[in-house]
Length: 185
Figure 1 (cartoon, rainbow, N blue to C red):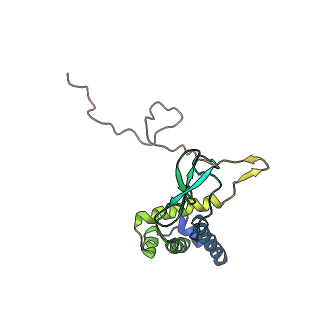
Figure 2 (cartoon, rainbow, N blue to C red):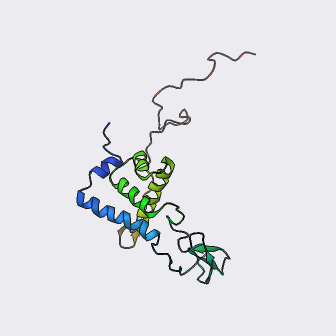
Figure 3 (cartoon, rainbow, N blue to C red):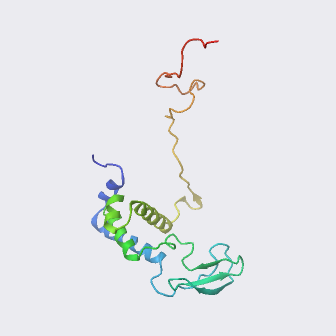
């Protein structure tokens, strides 16, 4: 069955030069989320409360510097609060997954290509989509006029009791449940 409207159709409609540009952006996104150096730059403020008063507080098992917030008393590291900050997968796995995602691979194919489970593949796809969404600028219809798109109302719901609804006739009669005659005494 041909996928005319889904993810495969979108990826198939992309020109090769656009695909290369998109791959570069996808590879930059995890790299920007996970600093490559051993020393991460200290954040300006606590990611939880926003207090700028932080001090060094030891190191993690992977030798990343932890910080202590003097405002809320919680410890954190530079990658805390980022979309890919809590990942345990190496950057090479994320790069292979980004390439598979851009090639239009299904979740199962991408999982097999990267050596991860189907559940992990699902989580990775959603995390990469979150990172890409964070890179997009806010859409505005005009100067100072923000637009918010939510859901589309389609008045074709067949659930619920339609006997009281005058404006929406039910397309099929109710099948009924139980006996049709009077109840036994």
